[in-house]
Amino acid sequence: MLFPTLDFGLFFLVAFVLVWAVSASNEWRKILLLLASWVFYGAWDWRFVALLIASAFINWGAARLIDATDRQSTRKAIVTIGIVANLGILGFFKYYDFFLEQLGALLAGWGYARDMPILEIVLPVGVSFFTFQGMSYLIDVYRGRIRAGSLLDITLLMSFFPHLVAGPIVRGADLLPQFERTPRLNRDMVAMALLLIVWGLFKKAVIASELSVKLVDPVFFDPSAHSSLDLAIAAYGYAVQIYCDFSAYSDMAIGIAALFGYRFPRNFDQPYRARSLQEFWRRWHISLSSWLRDYLYIGLGGNRGGLAMQCRNIMLTMLLGGFWHGAKWTFLIWGGLHGGAQVIETLWRKARLPALPGPLAIIITFHIVTLGWIFFRAESFDAAIAYLGGLVRGDWSNGMTTPLLAGLILLGMAFHFTPPSLPARVALGLRRLPSPVLGLLIAAAIVLIDAMRYEGVAPFIYYQF
Amino acid sequence: MARKNEHELISPVDISEAPLGEGRSLVWTTIVIAVAAIVLLFANAGTLAAWVDEKPVSEAQQRASDLANGWSAALEALGVTKPRDELHRLWKTAQAARFGNEAAGQ
Image 1 (cartoon, rainbow over the protein chains, first blue to last red):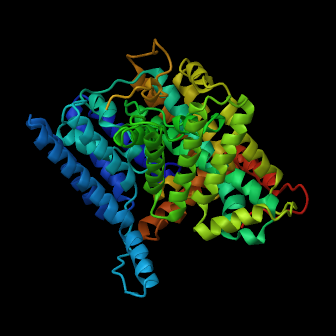
Image 2 (image 1 turned 180 degrees about the vertical axis):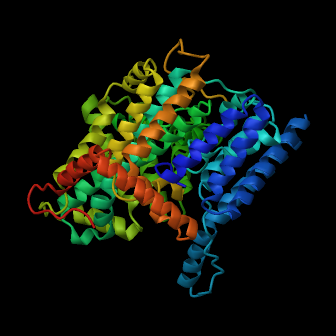
Image 3 (image 1 turned 30 degrees about the vertical axis):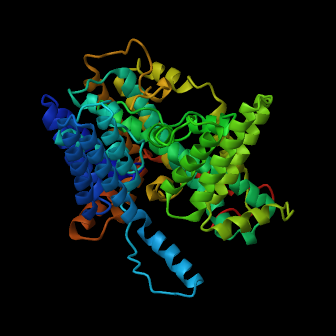
């Protein structure tokens, strides 16, 4: 069930009415939200609802056991088992086939070719998100940051449908306190929520879908059939597409959660205006980058232990961050590129070299990011290399880019250079409107988007992770 | 674990120090959503009919399809769906515009 569809619209209307109708009881509202979340998740594949419940049960039980004992060694053993269980779920569904394929290739290279027991496992939607959420919850309980929650709260934390399949990775420390009592709406959050939903709808259904179908997909499908100019513009197009696609999901998730009274933290902050890769990661997929920093980078030692260790930790964090996206070498290379660039930035800073002028730093950062997106988007390492080879072939004829596509790329970039407070200022204006007027405005905006959207809605890019 | 960077904790929906309408906001929100849904039922009737037609064929789906298509045709005859149709036509014109002889798509 995709957010920008009528199926989801009707599902939301029913859930909204029922959940607020029973809100006199916080427990009943949470139970209804949980059931709604399972219906939402089960729309993809009912079998995986059991996996979601099992995952929640493991994390709830492990956290309870951690909370119940004061012995440090026991606590450490339980948190380790819990993390291994979460990684086991992720590893089995996401990486099992990949590692067996690599092992098979390695054995074949040594002259010991074998038929490997490849299972062709179906990847449960959102498994990377809910396992990371479960791990952060366990570690937070272990470190005494939060107390272990009830089974209902933990199951809802991991299943809550707005963030379930593509984030943001909302931590227990952020959401569990909100589950303790029935939330209350105010016009500020509702106005901003509606704005985020409509804005996300526009970014996904109009910009990302049009760029995907008309430019990016055909060019990446067969780079050799396209000119260098087409390849360059499709790379920029993908940079805009993935931003509009993923930030749209986050915006809608934040907006939908807010209409049920819950606050999710921001996940994007105009990432292409970053002046360095380190700044880029403070603006892009913030819930993942902060997760990697707090639970992996710092866990590895962070910037303690000298410059060499810091550089090693940056590289390891980014490589694993890349691998989190999928079991493909291209994601590892993408992570390695981001890690390598951040290592260079760290060394540059330590050497006290002068900072680049702002606009130049933005342009360089954006182009490193766009280079990384080519690996991220390409089907294979060879396909990415073929794409890069085509870029320097020197054929600058335009075979793909129409005025509309060029306009959408420029528009997607322009979003990054508007005042950061603009959405809040618009919402502050909307909150004062009479409700029928705001309802009319929302409907008019949706009609406009529907008139412009590409026929059909492709799944969000991050659903595959 | 505690996060040092406070901006990561800020929710985009917290937009002012003094939120408006703590008391009756649920009623206000419900009316906003209800009005939007009803207007869309009229102004975007074609999308509803297309959605019903995409569902797996069954007796109930056929009945729903007849109803939705009848509803869409009636509103089209009244001109209610005209703004959406006109916007769609403009968008198609924009899609068809070319710098030269580029192909674009598929």
